[in-house]
Image 1 (cartoon, rainbow, N blue to C red):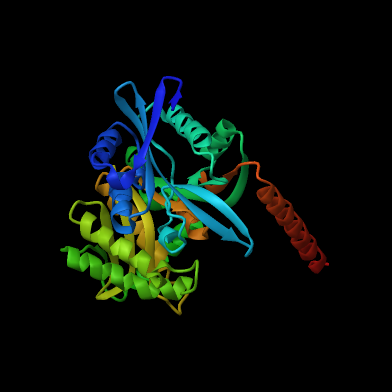
Image 2: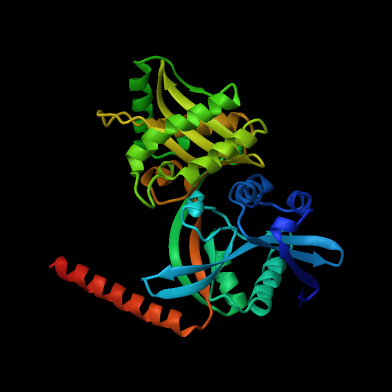
Length: 375
């Protein structure tokens, strides 16, 4: 299909002999986050082997855009069956728990809007069989733009703010990270540092081998399970597919500098351990495990993040991204930089309109019930 000066073609990812080289070439001409890099998506294809379709956007002979879509059936409420198209997700809950963020189409710098428009128009015209195009987690402004391009109803499924720290700005200011925080947060971190210092030197320690990196990831598991729980939609460490994805990612990317495992030590005791993704000198805090303390003056997470932020600043990284989530520590330690959403762009199907009416009625009833309980 041709959209303006751009041409969109498709082929199954499984038979695309040039996909890796094409993706890496375009990646160098784009400004992707780690989640649109081959570092992440190439690994996703390798580990989960989804039945993905490659979207290629060309301007003449020049490749300017790429995307991977997967089509599956989703059942909801026991009766509703929806044919769903997803971008860079499988449609299988356990496989999608790795939770891509900053999603979108990979596009050459300056052509992001044109590539998105070409891909969306192709999906709407050339693939008429789907009911919903599920996108997430994607920048909220970009989601609005996608809805305008397609003219489809936008159903919001999830949303969260993002916070982070501008490490380049910190270096330019010449100040210390702690000086940028509120007086209360700074006091809590300094107090925790002093109290942990009574156990021994507080320092950051990194693995010396991929085996040590995998061991560090393994040590996060029990702490993460204790904090988030082992049920559905809770800690990924309860999901073998999640653990397998990340263990293999660490094995592949730790030698390349694409992941970082950082232990925060107080003497001989590990009080926190962080698993970060690294791409284009940006740090993406993915998950961590913190010691459980009975003394609430001890803040291993706050202290650990503050030490990591200073360390990454010292090593020339540009940004420390806490990514999506409204946890208080993220807003205390970082600055808001965007909203992320997961949306479903829905075709005008009667079953989806009926679902929306039922959803609105339920939400209205819950709101009224909550208001009545307050009186």
